[in-house]
Image (cartoon, rainbow, N blue to C red; front, top):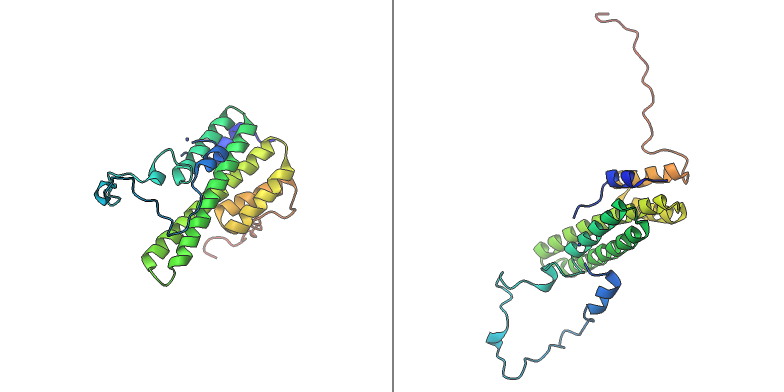
Length: 209
């Protein structure tokens, strides 16, 4: 069984948000591009906020947003606090929510990148990089969730998550190696990876020979 100390040493993203399910209900539904709300009666275009002004903060850059890196990071921090208190059910809930947030973000950024492919390389590269970064955060949340399941003596829940990480990260990357090591410790796989280096034969030659 994994202790809370081991979970802390394996490291959380030290990076707090409304419960995910409640917050999703607050997100506006998708609308057609031509469905633009009319200005209030008596209002003029000049009365609308200037979105090019950095002083006018955009909603998804503010601390209260769930669909943002900050929102996912707050959930990770809450999960870390729950682990410190050995409240594993709460930790698992927060990690699952963080995992969903990062996964959504990664998918959205990837879709944007694909839309700008061959049109604007600057936007394509920026969105593709964000998709990669949020996918890595998703995989980190998934790894921590697998550790929490181990701490709860639920290896059957940890194994599928660990395999997802290896498929996403590749076994040669650090998080992929850590996920495979967990599978080895659980007894799901028999061969260690990376393989231990074989003992090199000691040379019998003496200096100067």
